[in-house]
Image (cartoon, rainbow, N blue to C red; front, side, top):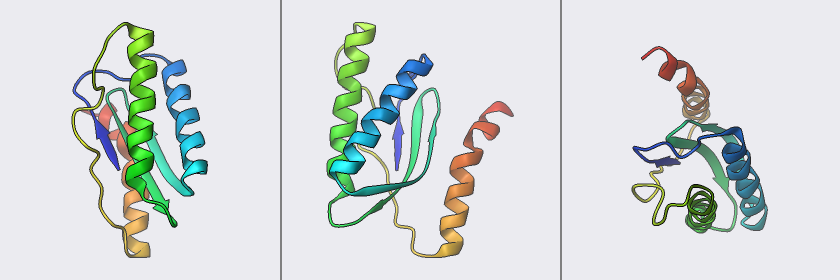
Length: 113
């Protein structure tokens, strides 16, 4: 999953912790496993495994909840993330390892740019 915005969406550690707390709450309610994650200043990478419920419901609630917090905290309004989240299916163990590596290396790559 990728949630992206051109502007900064995580200004402080408190913002990141709020996002992660919200993710934790909704992942439990939606029976979703979080296999890997990375919060960058302006986007989020999540590797999620769904069981019986759809990831779409979790992502919608997560996006709305965090946007409400962000708008209240920073006195803004409207949508926070540009588009609907992007996703793709991971069907093999080798691709799973590749995706986990990509997500966890994202901050390292960003520092070298």
